[in-house]
Image (tube, rainbow, N blue to C red; front, side, top):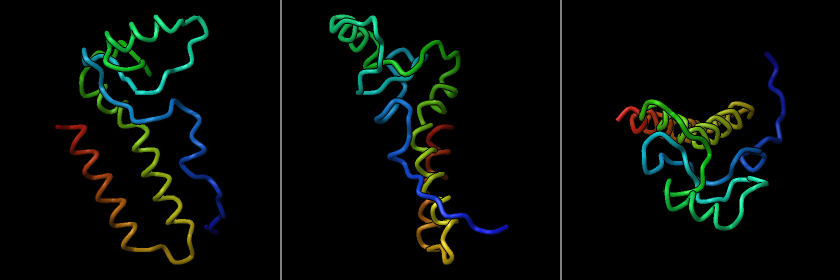
Length: 113
């Protein structure tokens, strides 16, 4: 299979920005960035932040491990992007590939911990 050039990188991600994490009640995913909610007032955002521990990305996740997996999605996206970028090179940097693999392994350990 021929290698294709790609200009895609993490900055092109169209989802909710920032680090995602499991919220206060373990059934929601939050971030420090206000998510777009056309009907929200500043008071609504502050209430959400106080209750959940941040701004909602998603809620009603029934298992804590599922919430941890969803919260890791931006990191997984970034690692996959880095891995693909290395794979697209004629001579991938083996040290970078090993580093990316180690980060991915640690992320999986953290999710399952």
